Length: 83
Length: 83
DNA sequence: CTTAATTTGTGCGTATGTATG
DNA sequence: CCATACATACGCACAAATTAA
Image (tube, rainbow over all chains, first blue to last red; front, side, top):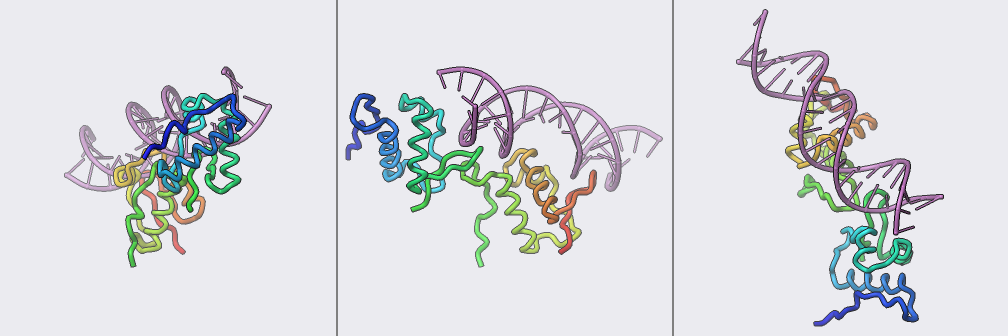
């Protein structure tokens, strides 16, 4: 299998960066990178890894929280929801 | 019944370690590990048994003291409240 | 009486993570 | 991108009181 360089943000494409990141995170969760109730990388890490602004990372997370894919625990981290 | 390895702290989960310990202690009290007016293990022991920092153990105890589940006697120990 | 061990009380410093402007 | 605030966790060290040897 080849998951390909799906983990690169295209800043000039038609899809907004935060939606790209949201898609990447969903793919990585589906792939099993992080199990349910496990924390995904911190916002700071995601900023580094994907070369995005923190605002953008937070927007992507907010989107996935809305979709019940992630849930945030204040002062603790962002976790993968079950199911 | 299976009490399971509920006595293991997950440092990376969404639930704070001190809250996990508080839950474990409450479960052990309910289970009858220590009767009312009997001392629970010392802070130092709990630190060893659960691999936590003393600060964390004390926070868990403080929480249960607030809930009237435990009471502390300085230089004496921490005891199970009645009821 | 002295000493050592035990137990809670307290403070300081460091690190990580989210929340917010 | 930067700064500040807050909550949490860990490690270390010392104090005070009690008990045991």
